[in-house]
Amino acid sequence: MNVADKGLPVAVPSTALFTDQYELTMLQAALRAGTAERRCAFEVFARRLPEGRRYGVVAGTGRVLDAVENFRFDDQVLGWLRERRIVDEPTLEWLAGYRFAGDILGYPEGEVYFPGSPVMRVEGSFAECVLLETVILSILNHDSAVAAAASRMAVAAGGRPLMEMGARRTHELSAVAASRAAYLGGFASTSDLAAGFRYDIPTVGTSAHSFTLLHDSERDAFTAQVESLGSGTTLLVDTYDVGEAVRAAVDIAGPGLGAVRIDSGDLLLLAHRVRHQLDELGAAGTRIVVTSDLDEYAIASLAAAPVDAYGVGTQLVTGSGHPTCAMVYKLVARAGSDGPDAPLHPVAKKSMGGKTSSGGAKWAARRPDADGVAEAEVVGTGAMPEELAPYGLQVRLVRGGETVAREPLDAARDRHRRALAYLPMSAMQLSRGEPVLPTEYA
View 1 (spheres, rainbow, N blue to C red):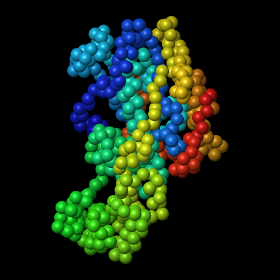
View 2: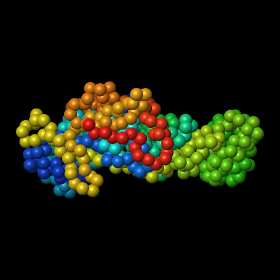
View 3: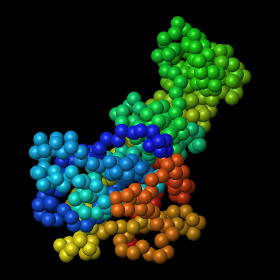
View 4: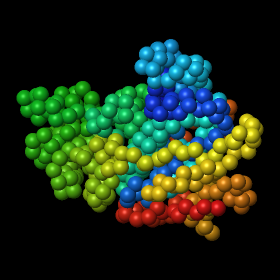
């Protein structure tokens, strides 16, 4: 759910300038050449996964649908383009009436993908499709990178809840998108209120070290927090001496203290010490939350520790070392000069240097083995083989310019959980290796 679903007024800015200038200059040249209205198919795919990743996560689809709906050139934008002489007057007149009227197909949000997977296909005239390249890629590359990191962290956490806490480590608008992608990837909550408001994600947060330092003593700080938020709150215990802080926390809040948070030091050692101390003080139900620049490997190293929840910031919102998925948006088929209803002809880039692409609008299916576990990502052109039809991956997202597949964020979150369950067990390993499924071209 987002704020629009709640019936609240939302100011939605135009996304028309979330584009690169060459998209407009190509449009101008194509309009002059008479090729702008040729029917085309563009595909989004990644030639390879980021190093160390064994699967990718499709995230940002819902945001892409919003961006396409709001891709409008209003008077202010047109005036700026005219003032800068970025395109000529006939092109400005064409842009004034721009509305995407084509079709978009793609993997549903929350699905996993592999090298060569046709994650999204945009069909329509060259003019209307080429303008969407940058905004689509910027959303999918960012959100899918964060969702992949979140998914790996959720796997490493083994069912223990994860809290997204990275808003202060990225751009303020990226933080909201990152929270959404993290929730899709398996995180339970966010500290970012804008993300909670916009996407209905559960929010969390209690206090920082500054709150303890504000007071004359740690006991005063804990007393103020408990009196305000109740004994079920989470007290931060590593401002001074952890042992003394835990003792004071239980003394003030009682055995019903909700949780303690450790934000520095040797987390593995401290978690064991604090758990033993809490149990001795009669606070066996008090949970231990750890933060402090965690990534999936740090989380995995704490698997045997008595940790109940993790808070993750920097590594999550930066994709844990891979802030982009290197997805590209390529023309794969177009009509010729033989009329608007002519069949689309495959086209492909054939240059050297690992940047080749495969022509033709593609279908995709995930073939299972005899036990029902996925064994290959099959990609092809033409008609999908009948035996693969039940395992097709693409769904129609936009038909004739109208969105037809909008869904709640929780639906995408649930889909991701199911997609992971369908993969081989090796997908759950954090070790480096090849993609967990091979991509076969039919």
